[in-house]
Amino acid sequence: QKEVEQNSGPLSVPEGAIASLNCTYSDRVSQSFFWYRQYSGKSPELIMSIYSNGDKEDGRFTAQLNKASQYVSLLIRDSQPSDSATYLCAVRRDGFQKLVFGTGTRLLVSP
Amino acid sequence: DGGITQSPKYLFRKEGQNVTLSCEQNLNHDAMYWYRQDPGQGLRLIYYSQIVNDFQKGDIAEGYSVSREKKESFPLTVTSAQKNPTAFYLCASSNVGQGAYEQYFGPGTRLTVT
Image (tube, rainbow over all chains, first blue to last red; front, top):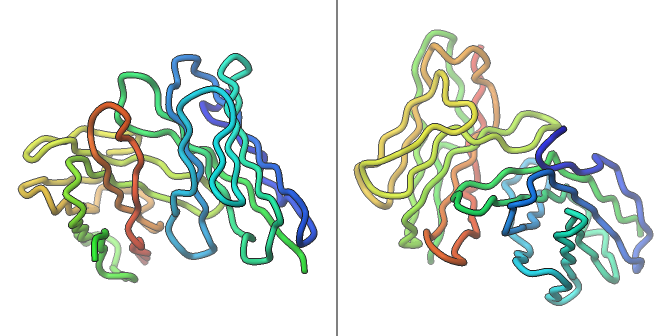
């Protein structure tokens, strides 16, 4: 079992819809969770970090964390074609500085 | 303008040659990291450093070496012992300590070895 799992996609949504990206992790002592966006050929860009159970909103983005079920999700409201990218989920275990990354979900937003 | 710079953007080398990738940050971050990304794969940690003159192996350190002589700089050497060096190399940095775990990435260096 991979430590951090994401569906590779592509996830296709029409412009204006809500895109829902999911990530599960295996280590129960994981404490910090991050979502990165990576455009083709570019480096990852941090979108959101979440540390506590529940929702965290930032503009069109909402991160949701459920530690009991060991999943974290990213919702993108009013999806735009410019949101088309690969979204990487990253997890940090308690007591460790380093992050473990999933392989990413490719999102395609069609006009 | 704070950020992380990596140079060069593209690098071509012949098999059997060592090559050093540059990473510099002016974010005043204590920790720096090197990752490798292969097509369709996630990021894999090569080395990381939480303080000057100290560094730890990541998950795929074989065939790589690093140094951390200055807080701002964390160069990575890809040696001839690395079996499949062609990849996209990403440098990142972060603060260290409670609640300070967000990592920020440089633009990357695309290395091709033939």
